[in-house]
Image (cartoon, rainbow, N blue to C red; front, side):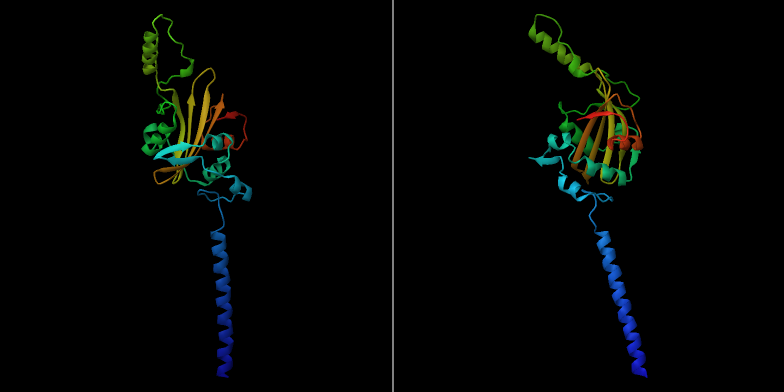
Length: 227
């Protein structure tokens, strides 16, 4: 009788252990299921993973941007997916943008200076490329006057939106010219190293909330884009 009792409970114990192991295994598989990368909580398609390529590399200690990756939006879908999954904290001043991020933006700017002001500050609403060379006979004087004029110009970018999470940030700013342009920038980072970057330019657009910017990035609202 005792042997029957022991055998009965032994079988039940074995069954419970097997079920527990199956549950643990299934949980592990679910937890390790591929997500958008680099980082993020939403699953993207296999084709999306195959097409993904970061636009950022470091050559001789300096950041280098693969403009072809940015212009063809090869990394955009992954970055937008990560943005949608991230917890972002909005900041309202350029002083709250991390220094390592501003240094990165400086390094990839044409004149090595990401010249931007807060939304309420004065800024240059004209395109610097629209400057006309002063009409004098002295070439050196022309160049000197042009340089002095550039020095006197206000920053040509105005902050529109900035929010940052643990590993991703969303930045938007306006620049002037014949037509106002709104720029949207996504920056992926690990610690203080930039690991991916995307940038788009939209004419005649003014949006300043995360929801509206994401709608624009996903093509759910009207707007003309380009990099």
